[in-house]
Amino acid sequence: MISFKSLLAAVLALLFSFYLTPLFRKVALKFNIVDKPDGALKTQKDAIPYLGGLAVYLSFMMSLSIILDFDRSFLGLLLGATLIVLLGIFDDLIELSPAFKLIGQCLAFWVLFRSGVRIQLIDLPPLMAIGLSFVWLVIVTNAFNIIDVSDGLATGVGIVVSAFLGGMGWLTGDDVLAFMGLSMHGALWGFWYFNKSPAKIYLGDSGSLLLGFLFAALTMRGAYTTYQPLGFLVPLCLLFVPLFDVIFVSIARLAQGRSPLRGSPDHFAVRLKAKGYSANQIMSFSMGITACTSTVGLILMNVDTEYSLYLLLGLVLVFISFFIMCWKMPVDES
Image 1 (cartoon, rainbow, N blue to C red):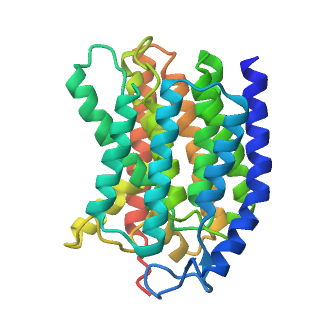
Image 2: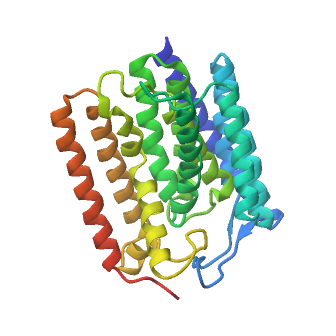
């Protein structure tokens, strides 16, 4: 029954999203809620409407409200997600300071903590689990905001991550994980049609922060070390691409004497564009990498430690190779 209902939630979310996204595009254009090119970080030719995140959020919410029975953790996840979406909308409208956004994310984390959603690892002291949960939530929430610099990129990566999370919930009998993962998967597919290059609408901070927050929260649900001591690395595999960009951008900015919190054209996607790759090629490449690393993560949970070390070594080599390749690419300063 869980499999049928979770698939139904995905289909409903897809239909809602496909219907709502053009409506929110019209609203954004009517009220001039758009991302205007500035010749620096925003290099698109025309002003592109925001509010795509609201279409994804409502599609996700409506499908779940029809299908899923509410429990404490589910309500905590939805309340936290709602706070993040509101924070993102204000940021799209008036550009909030990093400190204010961090305060909002702290409040969302408090909601999750009160609802019992936190990192669950065997033998991890409670206080350390709380601290790691907070750091993980903040990093992943902002990681999706950071990679949302190219048409369809954050959406495409989110499509793959949500599919794997939904599948993990399906296989392990975690109904909340299955329903929320597959519902978000459907909502993102409906939005992707309008967000792929050339994008007709953007996620905006409301959407990119929502994706990061939900994926951070959902990856904290699993007890990954039950069968494999190195299983705690599974979420890192699932979120390989956004975490890579966080590390790469931070190091690049620090190397130039800039603050990691200050915007710059150092993202791997921007460098690939400067090298001549199209937005759709970058999106497809990132989705493929995410699918491969997520598969490694699933295998990692079920193999002996010896084989898992080989898998992790392969991931490290991929990370280093891609890092060096991007580092050597030109930065588009135009």
